[in-house]
Length: 206
Ligand code: VGL
Ligand code: ZN
Image 1 (tube, helix red, strand yellow):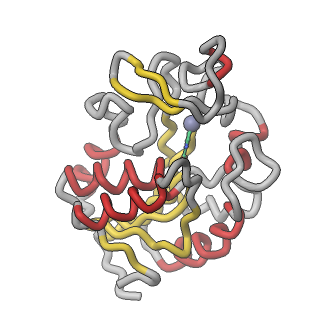
Image 2: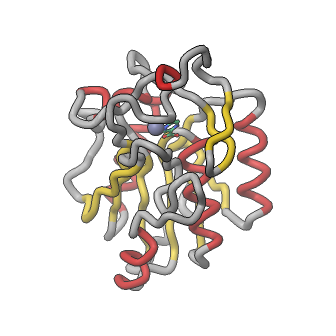
Image 3: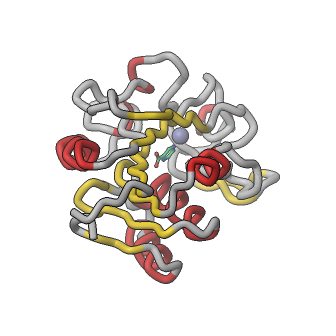
C-alpha cells in the first residue's frame, strides 16, 4: 500500500442498520468490517461518516402515506428514494458496528440530520449544494487524496466519491471494503458513473 501523509481514509456509514439484522440491511454488509479495519490501521488519517436521521425523516417511507419503501418520489430538491426507518439518532441501529475500529478516527461527520432533506454524500446533502463542512475540513488540513470504503456502494459511497472528484480530490474506492443495495440496477450504474468521473475503483490501495 502506497499511502502518503496527505491521504485520508473516509469510512462511510458502517452502522448496525446497514448490516445483516439491521433496519436497512445491505447483503453481506458486515463483510466490509475486517477490510475497513485493515485499511484504517495503515492510514495516518481516518474520518468516519454516520447516517443520523431524526425520527420521521422525510426520506422514510412512513412519512409519505401510501408510498412504499424503496419507491421514488419527487422532493423540492429532486428525486428521492424512500427507505424504511433507519439510523435514527441515538438508537442502536445508528451506532457504528461494534467491531468497527473507530478509535483512530479524527472526525465523525454526521449527515441526514435535517428532517426535510436527505444526505447520501459525505460532502453535500441531496440538493447537491448544502455542504456538510467536510470539504472545508479536508482543504484546511491539506489532504490531497481521499480513499473510501463502506456502505452502501451505490448510494452513500457513490455520492461521496462523485462529490470528492467534483471538488478536485484524487479519489479511490476500495471495492472489497464496500457492499451495495442494488435497487433496479443501481450498483452497475454507480460503478459506471464513478469510473466515468475519474474515481479509481481498486481492489487494494494503489
Ligand atoms: C444510505 C440509504 C439511505 C447509505 C443511507 O449509507 O448508503 N442509503 N441512507
Ligand atoms: Zn439514510
